[in-house]
Each structure stands twice: as structure tokens, then as C-alpha cells.
Length: 239
Ligand SMILES: Nc1ncnc2c1ncn2[C@@H]1O[C@H](COP(=O)(O)OP(=O)(O)OP(=O)(O)O)[C@@H](O)[C@H]1O
Image (cartoon, rainbow, N blue to C red; front, side, top):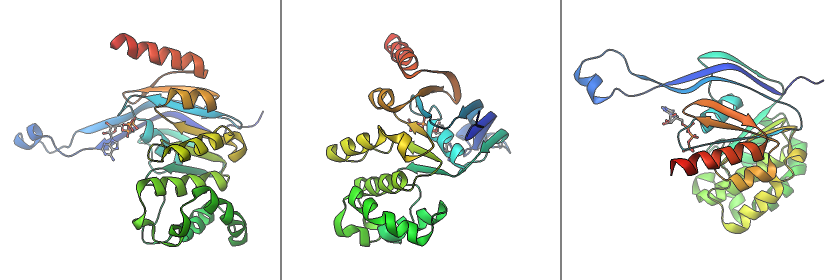
């Protein structure tokens, strides 16, 4: 059997936060660390689409960034076999450069040659569907346009591990539908994928397995229908 594309073993990560008023008044020399991820272990195998669900602030984006190598763990081990591409709103663009230039930068970061990116460029521009804005600096884009271009790039480049963090949130309805259609074939776009979403419907359609994050911990994982049912009834009971 092949080794997993991604393995996390007992990963923890804290953020240093600004001092609270109490700490300032007590002249405490230390800032309070915030434990965003605690003792996370998981693996992602070829062919899997792993969903991450959890309430706001539960650590989903932090976990996806850690998997992509944006954050480094304080303790534990992360093993990534291949290239991971994170797609989240606001990540991965050089704002001064045009959409076209950003396509080439992202592609070369993932190890594609110039001719390979040139070959894929028309399909990326067509999917993004932002017209002449593709030749304008990304800083002039609306959030929906950024989302379109980011999604088009990440899903055309075919990384080993595709990491999508709430990518459809700012797109309009037609784009959301187009993106969802493409996401349903995620297994053709990458060897494996990790998807953060608040939408149980989306996760149910595209994932092979789901993990449930709560206060920085993975409190459950399993088949989509099992975890989503537990998640929904947990929050229904809480009212
Ligand atoms: N750079 C940072 N510095 C300090 N705290 C941070 C930082 N990034 C995230 N946090 C904190 O870590 C916790 C987890 O944040 P994260 O963005 O991972 O949550 P999330 O589950 O993705 O939330 P949401 O569903 O709202 O996007 C939150 O309490 C957040 O305030």
C-alpha cells in the first residue's frame, strides 16, 4: 500500500497574542499563548477528499495552513509527500502583479515549466471568466474576482494535495455552481484534497471522510454522513 500523501502526528500550535488589559496592568512579562491546535493526528491518502467541519474559531483554517506549510507546528511531526497547494481567500497572490502574472508565479511555485503553464493558461482564464481584468493588477479585483481566479488556478494546476479553505464564499451564484461542479470531480484535479467548509451539503457531496474540529482539537472523524449527522444533532441539541 502507498504511503499517505500527508501525515500529522500529535501536532500542536499556539499563537502569541497581544497582552490583555489585566496582563498589562499586572506588568506581566509574558503574552498569553493561544492554543489554536492541540494534539492533532491525521493522514491523507491518495484518492481521499478529507473535509474539515467545525464552528467559527475551531481551528479549521489554522489546520489547513499548517498542512500547506504556511504555519509550522510547535510540537509534533508533519510529513508531506508531494506539493500542496492552498487555496483560500486572500492567500497566494502578489497584489501588485496582474492576474496573468500570478497564474505563472503560482504555476512555477508548483514546479510547472513555462510552456506547461502557457498550455493551461487559456483554460484558467476561461474558468475564471474575469475578462480583461486578467491583465490588471490583482489589487484592483473585487473579492469575488479574486476567488474566481484563485479557484481557477488551483484546480487547473493539479497539485498533489489541493487544500481548499472556504473558497466559494465570495463568488456569485453562477460561479458557486460552476465551482461546486468542478469540486465534485476533485479526485481528477489532484491526488488528494482537504476541504474546509461550513456547508454540510458541499461536504456531503464531495468528501470521502470528514474530521470535526472543536476548540483546536479533532473530536471525531469518519464517513461524511456519520460525522455530519452527529455534528448537526450536537448543535441542534445546543439550540
Ligand atoms: N495569526 C493569528 N494570531 C492569533 N490568533 C489567531 C491567528 N490565526 C487564528 N487565530 C485564532 O485561532 C483560532 C482558530 O482560528 P481559525 O481561523 O483557524 O478558525 P476557523 O475554524 O477557521 O474559523 P472560521 O470558521 O471563523 O473561519 C481563533 O480563535 C483565532 O482567533
